[in-house]
Amino acid sequence: MTFQKADLQNGLTVIGELNPDARSMAAGYFVRTGSRDETPEINGASHFLEHMMFKGTERRTPEDVNREFDDMGAQYNAFTSEENTVYYGAVLPEHQEHVIDLLTDMMRPALRESDFDLERNVILEEIAMYQDRPRFSVFDYARQAFYPGHPLGFSVLGTAESIGKLQREQMYAYWSRRYASSNLFLALTGNYDWERAVRQVKHLTGHWRPVEASRDLCAPAGAATVRVIQNEKFQQAHLAFVFPGVAAQSEERFAAEVVAEAIGAADGSRFYWKLIEPGRAETARLYHSEEDGAGQFFVYAACSPASAQEIADAVREVLAEAMDKGLTADEIERARRKIAAGMVLEGETPFGRLLHVGFDWQYRRALKPLSEVVDRILAVTPAEVEALLARRPFAAGALVALGPITELR
Image (cartoon, rainbow, N blue to C red; front, side):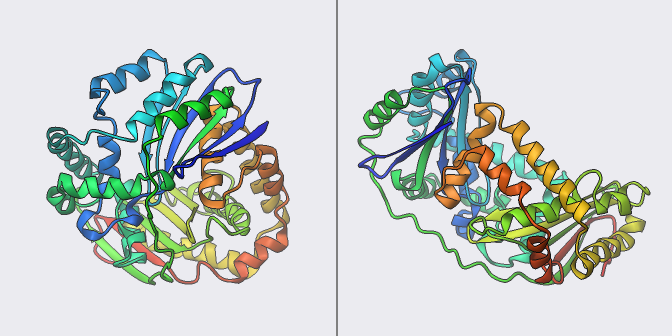
């Protein structure tokens, strides 16, 4: 593998992980923007804008955008999170120039008023749909409870009220700031022609200009609270805990991943043996989410309404035991191997490597080969895990319960 980087005069950076043995290549624009960068008045603008980026440019109609991806045989998509919006496509190497041209053109969308009004209805339908999917909506409620009034607690989709009131001019102003050349970069992975790519991007983006796009990195400590959202149309109780985690820039993130895997993986974890295998809960998982200057541990559990309090207490007991007594050497070893294996399997294609390469650069301005990251995971020590748990990260957090229940402690 060879890493490459070019800093263009307009503030845009192009990075690449070249693998000449690969039989495909992937390209993606990583925009440092998400719901965390919004205000309550424009909450949901980042995700709404992601939809609008597929609605055509000065050179392309919406039909052209989708048809050209399909004509290349591309695997393509986009997503918006709390902190990032990413647009990507994976193609055979002979389509490198075309996919870069298309993705770059999309970064300067037409934002037509007619498309804006139509897509608003699509977003409102999506919000309503997710309200009927408790496995997803409960996490929104939990983040809001943990970060009350703070952008880290904003919903990626926004609210029906904020989307209903959002104006095209507000979206244009947001796009002008957040999609400036200094606030996004292009990542390439796989078998590509580096010199040709850089020349092309220089030509296509020569008129782009950098703009200051700051982000508030002051994350609140998080609220310790319990909230019950009664909804009789759901058959199960859905529980979501949020606890303080580790920032994406911290070396402790590796230990945090091991802790989450050992305690809350889908199988073979403490949650599995204590809650799933005995049939006490349908689902019980622990995740770690690393973010810009912040991080969270999330627990999700689904169970019968009558068992909600029992499961909430059991989750707390498992987490307390981990903080009090730590993890065994065998648990740590198994967790390390499972994480490492998953990373290797996912990284076997340029498409699979793109997000890892992109987020390494986004959060840490680092370009590291997969082997180095895997070695670091496998090198997580019991002492590192013990140090993380000694801070008692699960001692206080937010719990939200959604479903046909009326109370929870």
